[in-house]
Image 1 (cartoon, rainbow, N blue to C red):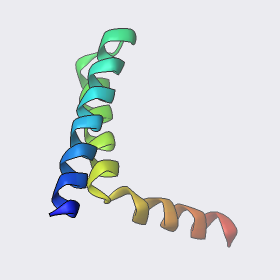
Image 2 (image 1 turned 135 degrees about the horizontal axis):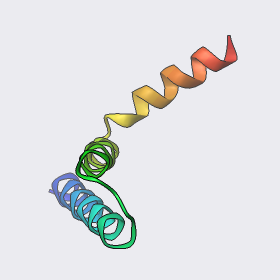
Image 3 (image 1 turned 90 degrees about the horizontal axis):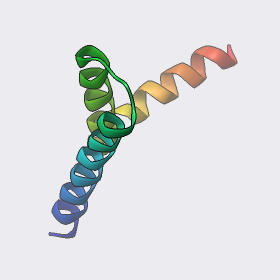
Amino acid sequence: MFAEFASATLKQVADWFVWLASTLGKFNANELRRADHEVHDIADGRYDGRIQKFQQGVSR
């Protein structure tokens, strides 16, 4: 139950970050959609693997 609550909270924070970016930034529709996708990837935990792959590639 706690994991579901934490996941829902992260998604709400992600939505808030995207809203803040759209309010403060001068993004076009494509940039805003890309930011939304990336922020939600982080909230869902899908971004960690990308970071690890990047770090492994840099350290080689």
